Length: 259
Image 1: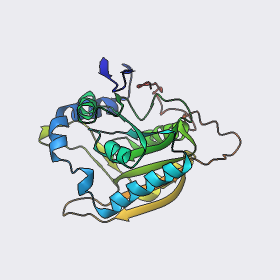
Image 2 (image 1 turned 90 degrees about the horizontal axis):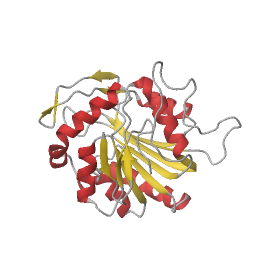
Image 3 (image 1 turned 180 degrees about the vertical axis):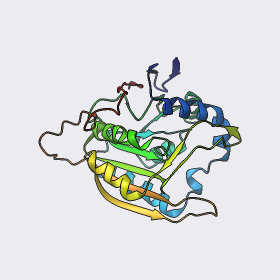
Image 4 (image 1 turned 120 degrees about the vertical axis):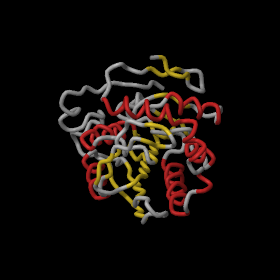
């Protein structure tokens, strides 16, 4: 399958073999992309806590290693990618959905976007000054989160920062409709303590977290977690991106985007 070209002239490549949940997420967000952009709140309408955490993340990256790029993994139409670029970060966006990437490229032609997966980002080890995972990990089955978080660790430079935002809980859901369209993805909501435990197992140090009650009736509680890859790590941790025990049984790790 041919992927949309990157905004800076490069191309990304998708591999046929992939976990089934990635195919479901890609197909679903390709279907809803146009209405998602219309219905989702832009960053200017976020609550003050979310905006403050994004600003704190940007400040941390600028103070630590401002020359390195920052990846928005699961960037969707690029709204938050562009917001952080406006705060002075060297942003790039990666998303599973070619339609989402196409919308991001149209809206923000000065920023690089590509199709890819956070299970195998396709960037060199230690290349990123920061990673944003903004409400983009909850479609990942819990058994795959160690793969995702290990890939965060691998691609972050020593001292690099992570901001993870998302809904929390203790539930698995499979909606049939979203944004006015049928969807096939599942959503997995984990307790915040479990998320921070998994980040720690991947070698990332949690430095702050902000938990918020639902801001509207019927919504879920959500959390923002700031973490970083230590500048100096214990001997034996290679940063290879493969978690202890490798990929989940029956799966293999493959690259799905190249930068």
